[in-house]
Image (cartoon, rainbow, N blue to C red; front, side, top):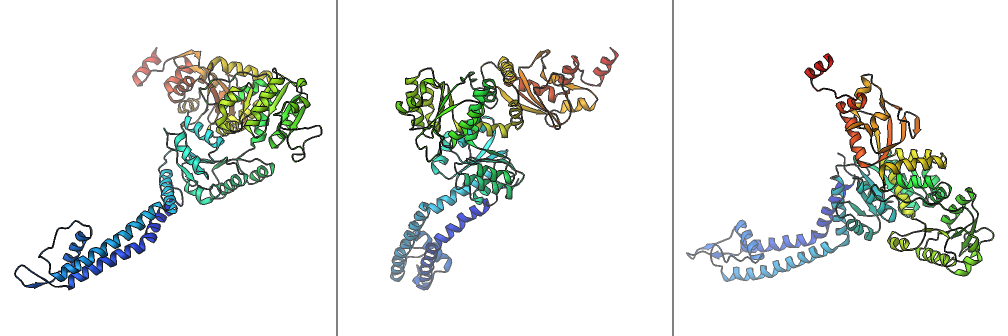
Amino acid sequence: MGGPAGGGARVSNVTSLVFRRMRAPLLVLIGAYAVAILGFVLIPGVDDAGRPWRMDFFHALYFVSYMSTTIGFGELPHPFTDAQRLWTTVTIYLSVTAWLYAAGNILALVQDPAFKEALTRGSFARSVRRLGEPFYLVCGYGDTGGLLVHALLDRGQRAVVVDIDPQRIQALQLDEPEVFVPGLCADAADPQSLLLAGLEHSRCAGVVAVTNDDHVNLTVAITVKLLSRPLQVICRAETRETAANMASFGTDHVIDPFQTFADHLAIALHSPGLYLLQDWITGVPHSALAEPLYPPRGTWILCGYGRFGKAVRRYLEYEGIPTRIIEALPDLTESPEGTVAGKGTEAVTLREANIQSAVGLVAGTDNDADNLSIIMTALELKPDLFVVARQNKRQHDRLFQAVESQLVMQPARIIARRILALISTPLTAGFLHLARQRRADWANALVSRIAAVVGDQVPDIWAVEIGREGAPAVVAATRDGMSVRLADLLADPRERGERLPCVPLLLRRGDEDLLEPEDESLLWRGSIVLFCGAPEARDRMRWGLQNPKVLAYLLTGRDRPEGWIWRRLAQRD
């Protein structure tokens, strides 16, 4: 298994730092001991019989060692002369001074920020090297990164985090107490930080750059493509220029939070069923299903005309929905003619925008307090208004739950879900892309089918690839000339007349993608099917995929006897 390049260098940095900072204290200690030992060797003593004797170097070292460490075994092997006792007194002060000097430097070294950082990096590098499972390298642990890491852990996947904010790295360990997530406080734009975090690790499955700095995300994308080209990289980009730059050198997926947010709102307005389908497919499994929404068509008021407001207005206009803009800085944001100057937090600006004739309102500023104030004021003026709230910070969940808005859209959550769909079940992105090309009636019907099998919980999403690893029984059956239909996988192995509680969403066969494939669709090696449904359906389906006997029952309705004798008897019958 490959390790992160630079990890060994960081560890050796700790050693070299210790030797560099402790060089002088060590030399002082060695010098003090050498002078003390030499003195005891040169100064003559007297043995018990009154004859002169001299210490050799070994016994001098032995005496100085226990004397300097205050163990104090006494005057050995013979009582000292006055000269020896005088030298002993000198060496006591000499060694104590040397040790105090060394201890002071050790304390200073332990408290040195550079030494602490070197130790932290060394520990982090060892943690990453020990990872034996596939993991994603997540750059940025803000709202989006936090939600993404949490969702990855919920799905049994591992992650390594790099963030420049030390408080976020500390929060990482508090947020995920059950599963250790290696976290490094460093600039993700530094290639050495990415290498230390496992960019070249054999288990690194991909890199996600979701910092709030486009330049950092761009640098991460460039680093990945230059140093580890096969890795999948997903980046957040808040400007079109950055997004185009990332796409130009092959960044796998570029996500604009404002466009994504506006796109979701447009889907909710255009096709509530498709919005619901998208919410369920990308939601956290086993959480409560969202209720359907039916935003009214008519004039909407849009508060805030920054990058987000512009994207929302463009999508609303595409849907044929007129808007009235309220913007605090209309000149700076190049707001269209007729824009009402103000934040929308005051009743006067909402009245000026003719709120009484509007059917909906988007509180879309980048300030959560302003958005909450806008909603509360607007509902005072017109209680039946359909309200969409933009929530910028995750910690304001309780406030946005309390305010009476029909739809709360949190860009961080939307982006995290989209990234999760891309990296956990890549076929999901293809399904959602094709689903957007269908009519609203199709989405409503599919939502009804899914709700019928999963009840009130968000379904599990899984993909089955017909291959030796995922479906050896199916591969063996097709190799023997048998036809395997999608309906055979949907049958319950306990009673083939019953259907598993799941819905096939997409069948990919080569270059062909079949949306909501029919039961009679044939499967062959290399086919991939995307399912959604109850978790027990996933487990039971695996029986037929893995076990030839179970698959034979699903295909023929008969139990295939095990062993040569029983098969011969069965053939005679």
